[in-house]
Amino acid sequence: MRVSPLTAPAQAVPVFFISIFLAVSTLGALLLYAMWRVIPIHAWDRGKLLSISLRQGFLLGCAVDVILIFHLLNLLNWWITPMILGVFIFIELALDH
Image (cartoon, rainbow, N blue to C red; front, side):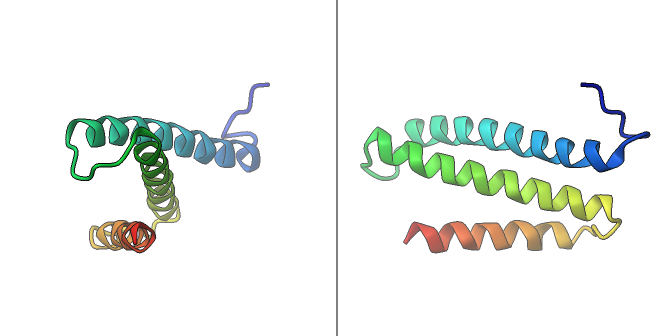
């Protein structure tokens, strides 16, 4: 099914954000898993590393989607981006403990 963002933005925009979320989450989780394997800060097994990397990839995908939504609505300034990323970093820190 072809959906043009010019003729059907109600269908194209949500699909765009879902695809960006999935791409960033997947790539982020894979890269974070590789990074945690190369830089072993903790003595965790592979299952724990995978679950942490998936959670961090999910949060990274959410952060990128929120930043893109703010940009789409013309609400994004240079200082809002670190604030959005800070919120997701604090969520990760809270879930880590």
